[in-house]
Image (cartoon, rainbow, N blue to C red):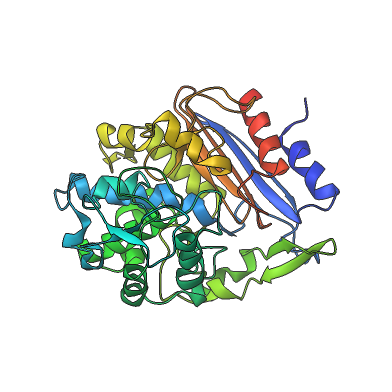
Amino acid sequence: MADLRETLEAHVDKGSVPGAVGLVARGDHIEVAAVGSVDVEGSAPMRRDSIFRIASITKPVVAAAVMMLVEDGRIALDDPVSRWLPELAAPSVVRTPASQLDDVVPAVRPITVFHLLSSRTGYGFASDFSLPAVAALVTALKQGPPEPQAVPAPNDWMAALARIPLLHQPGDGWLYNLSSELQGVLISRVTGKPLPDFLAERIFEPLGMTDTAFTVPPAKLDRFTAYYGAHPKGGLELLDAADGQWSRPPAFPSGAGGLVSTADDWLAFGRMLLSQGAAGGRQLLSPASVRQMTTNHLTVPEREAGGLFLEGMGWGFGGAVDVERAEPWSVPGRYGWVGGTGTTAHIIPATGTVTIMLSQLQMGGPSFPELMRDFWRYAADA
């Protein structure tokens, strides 16, 4: 069997990605491979501490922050979020998923904190982006590939959201992404602090996640990778350079996908979850909260309705949960997620394993690219 470096290099050698960093940690044993370059020009080799746009593997971090507020007694899972997000006090719902935005009925129940954490608010998307209530989210709220400098500030963003109906009643099904954005706004409004400040104080600083933030300062730009998409005529096209959109703070810090980070930083977060919320002699989360985060909360029909996004997996708080060995790489109880910028990070409680792979190529859709699948197969077998 190929080792980790060979697994990643196979994709770099055929030109599908400029470079990647892979990490598999079991207890104190850590296997790391940094292959390829930070850009297609080969201006610098990829390093273990290279910084990536981690996109949606931001979601578990923000969900953990919400659970800290629950443990602080500042919010409860069954609280209606309208107390802090008054824009969602009286949402409307499209009569059918395909209905136009003015063909609506009232919501029959309030949106709760639990709905936000389990991505069951009624806002978001699964596989069909053409539905009017989904298309409105993509265009008005930039619910697509991350563009941190294009998204309006939270209050303006929430005002725009309030004009868009839910795709289904709160609690009636799983939809992707937007619930995590709302988690970030909720944290800021409950605490009275910007989301970046709260995450730094409660998660990044205690865990030593020194390179994780919503922006990359000038002194670290030499470690920041370029970001690419597949060009329609073949090859790769630059979507964002190291000194691009993440080189200055965004107006809207995205709780769904705005962070930059390194493999070792996310490893520190994953190990905290594996240690039932403890890290460095401190208890950041209770074991009960970690169990809630890493337990599937979806029914079988909800999982199936998730389509290509879930591929049969369940969903905890901020991340997917493998509930059966549906693929060679899946492990029941595995928790984590993927990022549309070519990133993936999971914990496997049964084996005490953290697996992380960071690349810099935009995913072409909700299905998982071969690089990720090959990495997962390696991590499952290693």
